[in-house]
Image (tube, rainbow, N blue to C red; front, side, top):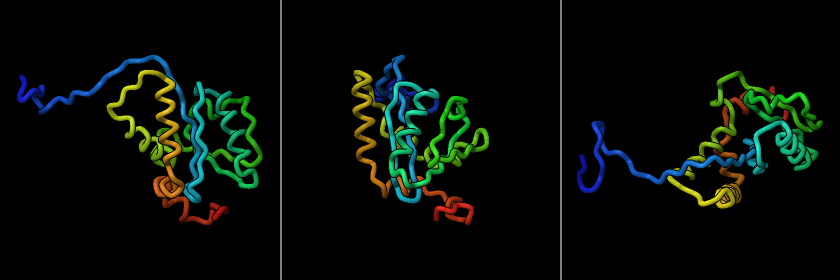
Length: 160
């Protein structure tokens, strides 16, 4: 059934939006500081231990005098046996199935909202769009989005 050119379903109006099924991927790795708003974000060709190692090394040389605590989920590539964790980085793993405790998940949600109903002609155009999102994200925005009360509520975090 249609009304005014819109398709109606039993529950209401069925939205019409662009759709594109593609089997190409790109991956955005990121680390965000809820304290300073600093970040490192890299587009890498795969989600595996080798690329995570590249990300860790890049994070290590960004402000090398700063000790970084990374909160991570339990993805297999985060725990690859061949990883060489730099001395100025510590990995802290969340309990299984608890992404709501990871400050970075809020950033991923923010970025995903920007993709709603968009279709890209190529992987390069998608990566350009992602780069623009990253460049336009300010330190204040990162600080605001990633700020969790538990980070500031205990002296356990000696960095404060």
